[in-house]
Image 1 (spheres, helix red, strand yellow):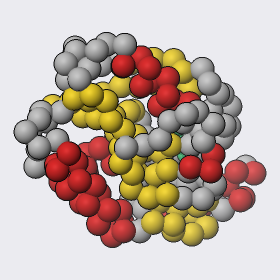
Image 2 (cartoon, rainbow, N blue to C red; image 1 turned 90 degrees about the vertical axis):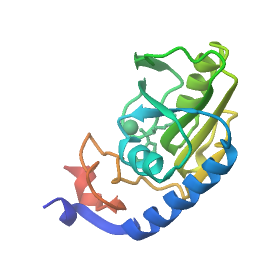
Image 3 (cartoon, helix red, strand yellow; image 1 turned 180 degrees about the horizontal axis):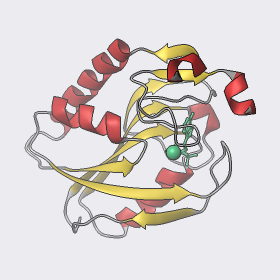
Length: 180
Ligand code: IMP
Ligand code: MG
């Protein structure tokens, strides 16, 4: 069973739900009178994205992007490939990028550069998790759920080798899982 692979739960479903509602309220306040384009970064952000937008009362539109930062294992490289682009023009739009976790910041730094060149009115980043101690790129989230230590986490959209995305909480895997 999947849960047997988890060493401990770092953030419970209840903690995540409470924080997501708070973030939604902060975003509603920020986007008052605007119609932001809320962009889900596949695949890790899917659970956070769907929970976040359903808690927001702001009128908004959505789109999806997939970027991959090549690099093996746990460390992302500085090279970011656009695997699936947006389907709408963002010129003049207020764009909100929804990310699962900010680690080195490389992925979002590059992504912000790409989207910024398309002349949006505004680009903001909301990340559920932030590991500021790991940051190497000059970028910070505008809104964030939780600051966490330098530990590899899974669940609530986040994966290890594509698995564990469907855990309803955020947890740490047992060392034996990585050794397999
Ligand atoms: P960055 O470019 O180094 O900020 O990497 C961000 C991406 O790395 C995230 O979107 C995740 O896909 C992945 N990542 C970073 N830390 C973790 C983690 O603790 N668990 C799962 N994925 C992670
Ligand atoms: Mg990932």
